[in-house]
Amino acid sequence: GNSVTQMEGPVTLSEEAFLTINCTYTATGYPSLFWYVQYPGEGLQLLLKATKADDKGSNKGFEATYRKETTSFHLEKGSVQVSDSAVYFCALSDPFQGAQKLVFGQGTRLTINP
Amino acid sequence: DVKVTQSSRYLVKRTGEKVFLECVQDMDHENMFWYRQDPGLGLRLIYFSYDVKMKEKGDIPEGYSVSREKKERFSLILESASTNQTSMYLCASSLGGYQETQYFGPGTRLLVL
Image (cartoon, rainbow over all chains, first blue to last red; front, side, top):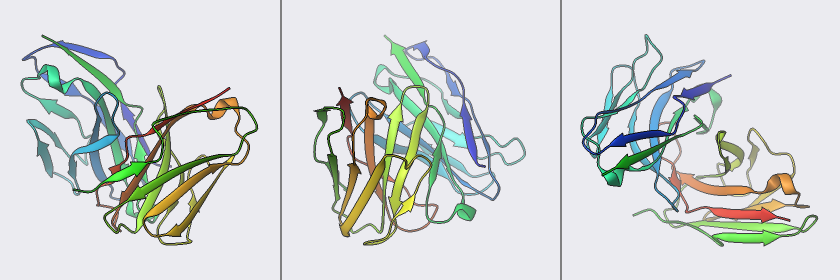
């Protein structure tokens, strides 16, 4: 079945550090890939997405590239802020699964210290 | 902006009680979803619905049922709450299509004693 694996957290960085959160996936078809973010006390919201191989999604200084050859969708940001502290979820949606079922990774908690 | 609202932010119930969690979306979305979120497990799909009165089981439907009588409202029902159903419950909605963004409510944290 389909699955998403994220790097283990928690991750703690200093402000202005470079961020990478690894995400790899297994899918039977050609999935769309998503990064969602959950700020403290809130629901999830879409951060960025990519719908085909070699697409790059970007938003708020974050970016991720859909790499079919390595089945990866790593999240990166060049200079993190304290306000980026949140839980980040990688997810996929596979058209062969029918409807729009998202499969999520386990989440990575990120803390940015000033 | 899409708005997904959930009836309660926090709930405390006793074992064996019947529990109703309500979700309403205001963007005429076809699809609605119920997930539970547990530490280290991410989000797991309980049930989803792609149309009024239509429902499909997700990955962990045991102990839950759902109702969708109107397009904007999707209810999750715990027929007889148990302590292992203590969790955060998240509702989401989306337009049809596997590339579409899902929009999430703020979540309901349920404690079953």
